[in-house]
Image 1 (cartoon, one colour):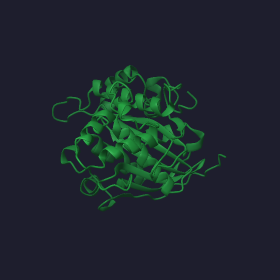
Image 2 (cartoon, rainbow, N blue to C red):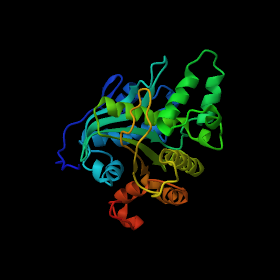
Image 3 (cartoon, rainbow, N blue to C red):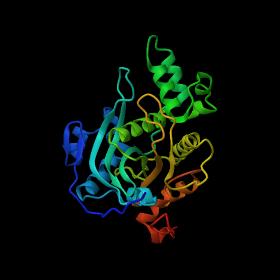
Image 4 (cartoon, one colour):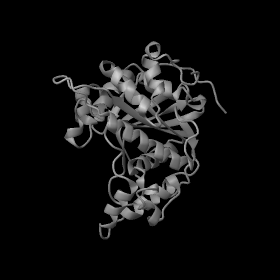
Length: 314
């Protein structure tokens, strides 16, 4: 049942492992990735902070994220109650670090309690493939890493056979980070007693180096990420996605271990385009084999792009 949600702005805060984040400097100190090289202009960590801090301070979501969520009736009027940066989720009983969400939001939408996990991306890859990850894990004597890979793949895409997982031209070619992220999202949704979960890729393209004027994101890498996301979604659905744009789902993972079975999962991508590089970014978007950029592009520049600001009505 879809219920009516009365939208009311409320004061929100971004919380990081080091406490409340009130500025970009705060985010760098309290919620930035562990590797210092990731915290700079044009990389997803800092671009995510620049997009979300002012929006959250105003009790809002970034416009492209709001447009994407509102494109589905079940997710309309999503109002977060908590916003956490670099939130850690335990994935199993094994030792070692779990899933670090760039952002984790818990709140309510039209269908009820909802968890939204955000993975920021500029043109960085979705890490290694399943095949590469499992190969590395198998070389570590006495490690539980191979078992973790098998269990998470079984829980999300229903495959735990090494022959299939090591096939780089098949299931093994899927990016493991997307499996990992989905597992963490569903675990957090169950912990929050949510009725649905969203894994949202927040993409940032078109930033330029302020000194050289050179673009900080490369079209071929953006296209690679779009292909990888499409392949993962096809694995979730058991087929190529019938609708190649927007927020897809709900999918229902097989579950297993700490990952709940059958909890409705939505998957989508919202893109923020640097206004100074809009022409370049628009041309990149048209070459992507499968993308979710319509919501963000239309919401920011509908007149220039000739489309409706609401992708549900486009």
